[in-house]
Image (cartoon, rainbow, N blue to C red; front, side, top):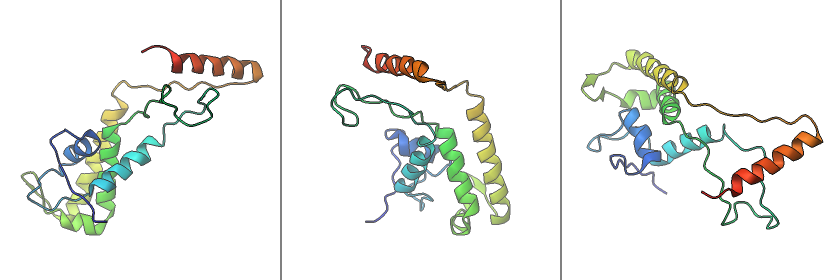
Length: 158
């Protein structure tokens, strides 16, 4: 299977948004990352966030039709930072980057520049105001309470 390289100006966010953030959008030039590589970076970032408990009622199957779990939160800044770090650490990808937008790059300086840009993306994500709630249980009673609250959250009308 041949890798695909697409950019649809934001019509396909999981691929287009990280590609836009790393300035890999010029379809007239060879693109640095294949779509599959960007989706793999997205999957890696999404596995950080997972539900420790989910309930499928008596069906016993994952994600039955009326109870579809939401996708984990996706930080496109973190995905872009991961791609930039991959680019900086891979000499073959780094050598293929001669120019980003109107900036001419030397391979010795570009690794440092890409790392700095990745740090800025991570800082932007850290300061975005997003937060995560972690619920913990200490005993059976608190587990039971959390379990039923989770059921209520997942079955609440939209």
